[in-house]
Structures are given as structure tokens and as C-alpha cells.
Length: 416
Image 1: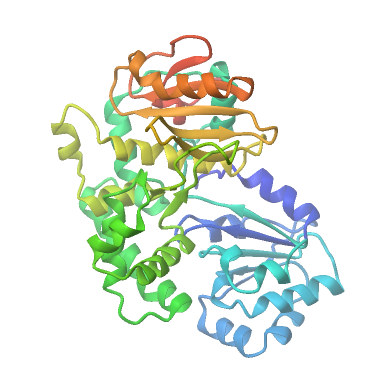
Image 2: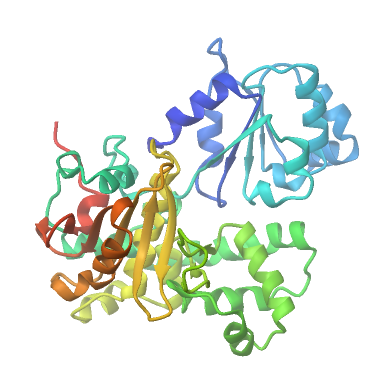
């Protein structure tokens, strides 16, 4: 069993907040994490899952009676299947505002579900649980690597050379615990096929009542080929043969299920002429490799690695560490009308920024810092540092607050 690095944050939330939600994609181990959380007196919480047909029917037929009959702290799994419960939860919390009373899990973004924002505002804390990070897979210490990169805390990272086979293995496996556990490529591929099919058959139908499902997997494959690129609905509409209104509806559904995300552009001054388009990503590189037919043999046969795949890998790792960042970091991309760009921008609550470029190769030169130097020159007072993450061996300075950092920063296990 893996130790999840948001556990301490979850326990703190349960200690002072009536309703806590663990939000994330299916099969990211939300249920396991929820069931491990004891009550304040150390006893197990009552556990109910809305994947059970009897429980779901009871919740939908009489939401208020269902919630009123629950004594003591309770965990309700897959809350998105019965959004009718939200108003009943509000009423129960208003009657008895007990910290940690309800622990909910959701495989769809509960903040996008109808009525939730109004019904549980001020009574709820939402935590994100992404699939396993590389550090969690390595059973590494609970070190927030996004914070360490932001601060330039190289000593905490205890960097080691980036081993190409190790990087390829992580690209192909992704972070879903079941996929990580399958070292056999064919069995892992079968798991990804079943995973996508299960989401289509259950969650898509539950949330959108879409009966003709063939267009959704086709669109997911199409988005896989565009991971780490600017999101262009007009181009996607032409490629998919779908009306833009339909395509946007499907895209929003995939977003709600954590299968795709859009990364918004960073802009400190709205009057600046920055590109306004977000970037689109599939947030699990293992699923991305599966959808694109990328194999161990295919990666090994080429001298380099696909840049979009490695950028997607970094995006996924950043999201997993931002979920428990002590700085409250937010994530953006940067691109100007003149095509000056930085893959990722980390920003803290005080408005300070660190830029991150991703380079798939094992070598770096000064040209790879072009976008970071531009960001440093234009945003000097708030610019912390610029980092090029690359598949090489050494931590190397490239000027004032500019560094080349091995991608092994994500999985190196600090020695005690």
C-alpha cells in the first residue's frame, strides 16, 4: 500500500471542517484513502458507497431521510452519483456543525455539479487526489517537490542523475495504482482499455445521459495527440467532424471526469498582448501512451523522447504536488503573441513566479532558456528563478537564477 502525500492535509481538514471531499479520477485510490481515516476517537468511520445499487436508490428516493438516519462520522463514496444529497447534507451540517462529520469522495469534479457551490459553500473543503506521484511510487519522504523547485531548494531534492530507462518506465506506467502494478505491457494495456470503457459505461451516462458513446473515445484519442498544445476548438471540431457546441459539451464532460485538463495562460497585466488560449493535457502519461500506441520498444528505438509526452509527465507531477503545496502554488503557462513561451509558471500567493521549461533530451544549451530569460527580463521584481527540467545527469547553473535540473527530481528518494 502506498502512502499518499495529501494524508496530513486530509486529517487537518477533518479536524475542523464539517464536510471534506476527496476529488479525483476513478481508480486513483480515493476510496482506500477515505477508508483509512479514523474518527476523532480512533474508531472506524461508517462507510457507504453509491456504487451499491441499494444505497444509491435509497439516497435518490429520500435524500433527507437518508442523511438524517446516519449517526456519527460517515464516509460516502462516489457522491457525484447522487447530487440530490447536497441540500440534505447542508441541512444536516446546519443542525449539527461537527468537524469531520461527512467525508465524501467524488470521481467527477464536484465543484462543477449542479447546486453544490450554493449548498455547501463555507461548510466544505475539497482536496484533490491525483494518481500516484513518482515520489509516492518510490515510497519517498513527504517532500513537496513543486515547493522545492519554486524555492530552488536543491539540497532537499538530493538530485541524482536522470536514468533514461527509469524515465521511460515512468512515462509508460503513469500513476494509476493498478496500471503501475502491471509490469507486463499487454496486461497494462488491457487495464487502460477496461478503464476507459468503464468510465464511458458508468460515469458518462450518469452525468450526461449520452447513449451514443462512440464519439467520446474518438475525441479522447484526438485530444491525446494534442496533449501539451494550445487548445483550439475550431481545429478540433474540424478534425473530429463534430459541431463546436457538441465538441465543447463533450470536452467539458471529459474535464469533469479528470480525463483532460486545460491549463490557463499566466498574465499579470490584462492589457499585455499575451496569447489567451489555454493548453490542453491528458493528466496521466500512462493513459496518454496507451491511447497513442507508444511502447517501450518504440521509445527505446529512438534517440530522443517525445517532447509532448515528457511535458505531460511534468504537468502531472506538478498537479500532484500542488495538491499539498505549503505555498498554495498555482499553475499556468506563458506565451506571447510573438511566440515567446514558457511551458509552466508556478505562482505563490504573494504573486512571485518561477518558470519551468521541459526538455526531453539529455543536453541543454543557452537557447533552451530563451523564454525563461524573457520572463526574467519582463517580470524581474516577481521572478524567482527559471528552470529547465531535462533528462540529463547534473544540476547546472545557466546564469543568475537560471538552472538546468534533472527530471529525476520527481522520483529521487532522499537518503537519510
